[in-house]
Amino acid sequence: MNKTHCCIIIAGGRTGGHLFPGIAVAAAVLKKNPGADILFVGTGESFEMSVLKQYRFRHEKILSSGFKGKNLTDKLVSLIKMPVSLFQAAKIIRRTNPGLVLGVGGFASGPVVLAAKLMGIKTAVQEQNAFPGLTNRILSYFTDVVFTSFSKTHGFKSGKKLIYTGNPVRTLPAWASEEFCAPPGCFTLLVTGGSQGASSINNAVTGAFTKIRDLDSFFIIHQTGDKDETAVRIFYEKTGISACVSRFFHNMPSLQTKADLMVCRAGAGTISEITARSKPAVLVPYPHAADDHQTYNAAALADAGAAVMISDRDLSPDSMAEIIEYFKDNPEKRRTMAVKAGQLSTPKADETIAAIIMAMAEKGKA
Figure 1 (tube, rainbow, N blue to C red):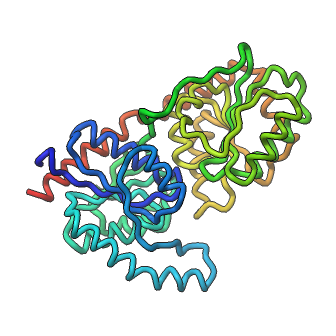
Figure 2 (figure 1 turned 90 degrees about the horizontal axis):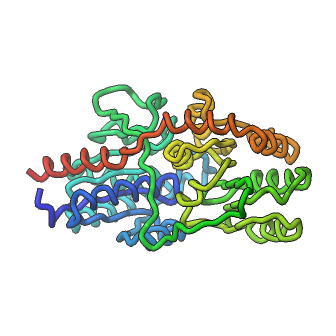
Figure 3 (figure 1 turned 180 degrees about the vertical axis):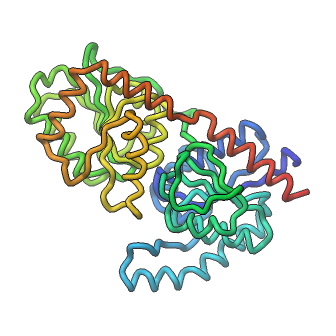
């Protein structure tokens, strides 16, 4: 393959769980082939656009929306959009002539991968979760390769096209500062509901700190999402707890390395980052996730002794206060969980996927 004229399309995104693995693979491709041309194709939502701009990747959008879990009207709208999105995807593919299209999940992944397959372009899918989403389950029947993130991924028909690689984990872009300092001797708690935030986690954690004693011994890093940022910030200011609060942290990989304990959702990206950085965690699966895939994700760590799982319905200030104080007072338990989390990591997932798709693209162009 001519290293100065290699185009790979990465389709999907919308949420960090889909987008960040795609970015990790793109970075690995560019490391192997600095002249490669990477194009992301998505729905053009603000989060997606903002993150890709920060990482300096090109992006084009198509008209596409979800189907599963929608009401009848929304499903009809999604069906009407399908031929439009296929036409838009085919137009992009014809103009860029990629060697391969990689779907990473999300609304835009399906039309772009399908259009590529119909046009004779090599295709692959990267599934982040222990139970795949509807789009990837459908695409798995005709795409060339499916990369899985868990050794026991449910919902795919077994076969040679399934390749267990682990989930690619993002690294900090060049612009992001890794500087971070907590007050000396403080227990650092990292709280995040994912890129969208989670009100149930935000409320449980802030409520817990109305019951926990010795507040001066804590430092909180709290990613709140848009809706709760102001209220959470005001709470910590009024209670005098040392905290760093933001709706979204672009330097999350750096912050994770400083945490003594993480309290978070169980999206695939978060799970992979927990294992990559060997961190003890309390996992609260999102109860409305498609096919309850976050529970599958969390169970994979909890069953291995690498994390504690608590259901969203059992979340309360009292239960969270008990959990936080237990882990703060039991460093040996944290160390044991951290070691087990690290044993589940797949640090070269991005490089493995990059090598395979580049070889596929070269073969497809031959």
